[in-house]
Amino acid sequence: MRAMTLLETLGAALGLSTLAGINLYLTVLVAGLAVRFHWIELSSEYGDLAVLGNPWILGIAGTLFAVQFFADKVPWVDSVWDSVHTIIRPAGAILIALAVLGNMEPTVQVGAALLAGTASLSTHSVKAGVRAFLNLLPEPVSNSVASVTEDGVVLGGLGLIGLAPGVALFVFILVVILCTALGIWLWKRIFRMKQRLTAQAA
Image (cartoon, rainbow, N blue to C red):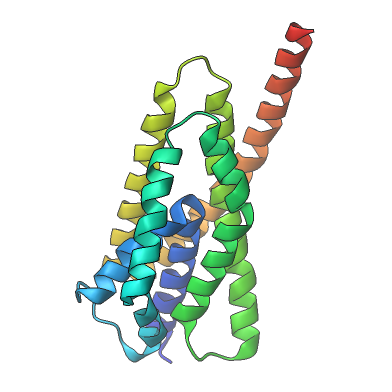
């Protein structure tokens, strides 16, 4: 495999995994529609991604995205939804990454699966942390704004992967690093805020 092709493959795998941590179902739905309607042409290296264009996969992803679209805008319901998806999003990201990699060496696949799960968990942690923080605020409007913003980020990221997967590799490496640091800082702040609110209530 040529070096550039390898970079593109890794960029697609990491990018889709990272975006899956924000919105797994929108990532699968849009990527599947792109495959289904030939908005992108899959090379032999990406052949396994064709499964995303399957009508059943599109139907399931579309239905779950519709459920999330509404659940994501209701205070505390969004946090419950995020809690349930703490395992689902990284697991989905791993499956997508393995589909992108196709028939590579088992060592590469295992390493990529671990990285994909970690990338997805990093963005999921930030998403869930932001929602938990917003739910501590008195006004509910910010939940809808955050939801729409997240969907926009996913669509923008998918566009970058489609146009320049090689560039996407370096962009998403930076995103994962930043999200990991931000997630740690955010959750520490949330726990401190909860402690203050509990102390005031007492």
